[in-house]
Image (cartoon, rainbow over all chains, first blue to last red; front, side, top):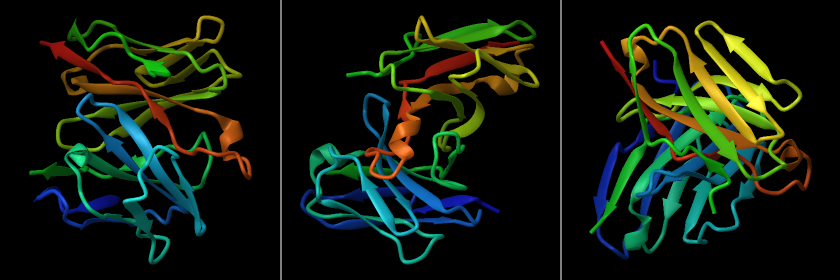
Length: 114
Length: 119
């Protein structure tokens, strides 16, 4: 059983389109995250979501919006896709919010913008 | 600006020997550190962590050392095994950010070191 699953695994689309990436965790965790791994291989936090509280990294454009229908899901919606959005996006979850909470990652979604 | 630096993009070690992966950080507010391991086409997997109140934490073959004055930590793997071949990420966090109104959440990662274990 996959603990944190993301769909799709690959996403190829054109500039200007709107797309969504889904994330589900079956670990019963309270906190979920989205990270972006760019071409330089840095993993950077985009959002964390805990108990209906959304914490946004200030560098994330407002074209990106997370949506959480319930505690087990945190989907990522991206509007008006740009070339610079090409990256691997990782979803993660942890039992609770806190610096000492190990995060469990999905396998990533590779987004390519044509 | 890189707040967490892993200056060795790759490291090659013979099977059975010790692997030492290094990590430096610049933000003195970091007070919790974690190591993650990543195989190709998979997400990172948590390995081991250390709080800034400690200077060593051990879990089986894995030991993490923290030198706060030097803002340096290292991961030791003894003995190294073929399955240890992966990319290792150092990550850091600030406890105060998790307090109400603390601000940015999540981990700050280094760029990773690709460890290759040779038979």
